Structure formats: structure tokens, C-alpha cells
Length: 67
Image (cartoon, rainbow, N blue to C red; front, top):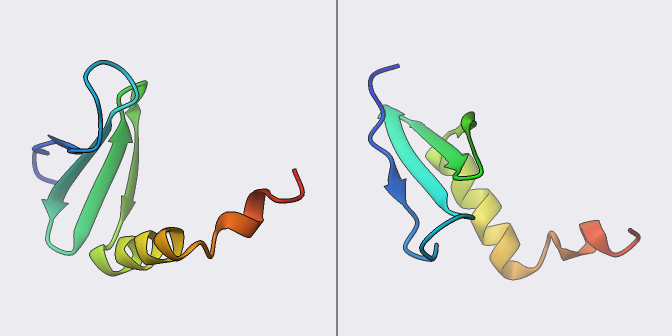
């Protein structure tokens, strides 16, 4: 992959707990967290969009009900 240009989420506050996003290659999205920047998740824009829509709709809320 080419060099990554990381952008901090506009919803992240100053300091820790920030989410960073990069597009290192066509059709690839990379995500990392400020607490552990060496751990990088990669996905496609379509898959990330599906995940975000499901989270906004509350579809994923039931995953924590029985914990």
C-alpha cells in the first residue's frame, strides 16, 4: 500500500480516544485508534458504509443486550 495520510474524525475531541481514517489505495479504507495506532483495520467503502448505516439504525444495539 502507498503512504497513508491519516485524517482525524471531526467527532473526536482533543487528546486520546480519536479515530483516524485513511484511504491508502483505491477501494480501501484504513481505520486506527489513537490509543493503539499500530493496529490498523482495513475495509472497503461499501462495507464501512453498511456498518455505519446499521449502527445509526440501531441494528447493532442488540449485540450488547445479553452481556
